[in-house]
Amino acid sequence: MSCLYILVRAGDIHWPGVVPKAWSLFRRASPASVFELPEDVHDTILDHLPVRSIARLALASKGWNRSIAASLRTKRRWQRLFEQVNRYSLSLRSWFEWHDDMAKLFSAVFTLCDGPSSCVQLVKRMTSLAIDVESGSDGRTCWSTVVVAGGGTDTFGRLLNKCPRPHEWTAELVSDAFLAMDGMRTLRVESIEEASLEVSDALAFREGLAERQGFSVGVTALLSFLVHPDVIHSSDGRSWYVMQTFAEFVDGYCFEDLDGVIMGKAVAAMHWPIEDVVNLIVKLNENESLAEFHGWTTSSGRSATVAFIRAWARDSNFPRAWAEADLCILSANVARDGELKKHTMPIILEWLEAVLRPLTGTIGVLPDLKIACDLIAAFR
Image 1: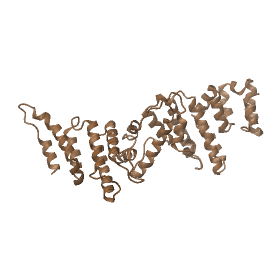
Image 2: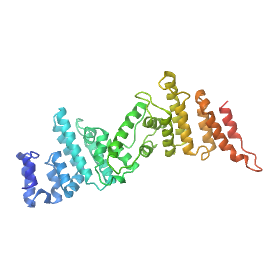
Image 3: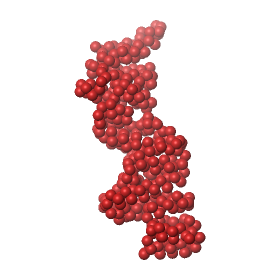
Image 4: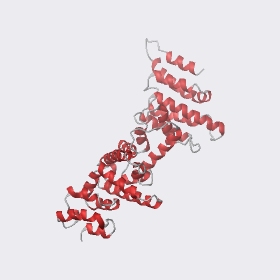
């Protein structure tokens, strides 16, 4: 019994008007089963199959999987898929059925991909084509309802973790896949509330991937790509994104000393320029000051912000490995807030000592004390 006949009996293909077209291809090729059909007729047969049947064929053989993956790289296939989803009723049950079918299709294709890089390239291509088709549709169907498959970014992460060789996932590939999922190359972060939503989606996506044994991309490694200036253009946006990744400033307040230490280490690992570090310190201090004023935290003395500064400086080898001007920039900005200045004074003095100590051993050369004068003036 042929697989095509089984699909008809299972109700995946309806006889009137549809099967004769596929059946004529089947008879012309004269194979023992649908799996032996030449690959050049696969795409035509796919035109007459619902999504659930395409998903089954993708798992049934590597030949069909190759054909289906190639088909998903064409605009024509996405036009067909959008036509199918537009025929679904608007009932909640129908939409869940559609999402489930699409999830099975993506899972089947990713399962037999060559690896993470191949999967990410497929996602990028599908996104581009689907959004192109979407722009010419009636607006009822959109790529996000198709690709997310009804369950959020963590669901799509779980679908992608089906691809072979999970140890080949890198932070860059995870970042590319996450951005491609919504057809984006950049993240729009114009407030800390927007940052909270973006961070939640990214972490959920990573968690979906991390359920596969062998996946080893950490949060900090992924973050280094997502907060790159090419992805988040504004310094404010990058600061808000980091803040919401390691602490909570939107749905309540949770920023403690340990959060500051972890955040400081992460920022040091990302090698931010001094201007971005200062921007982040200012925002952390503003939020911690507000929390202390309203009694949202039991700590005092801006302890979490100070913990961030200490951890970042230690892991960044600051100020030894930095320009003298960077030390002046950071110190001057810290000194603008009297409370923060008071609690960071010991740290600043340690930095000053680290800068001046090598100069004291210089023979026959008068040490340049301009940096010391600038620091003293800032902390008066």
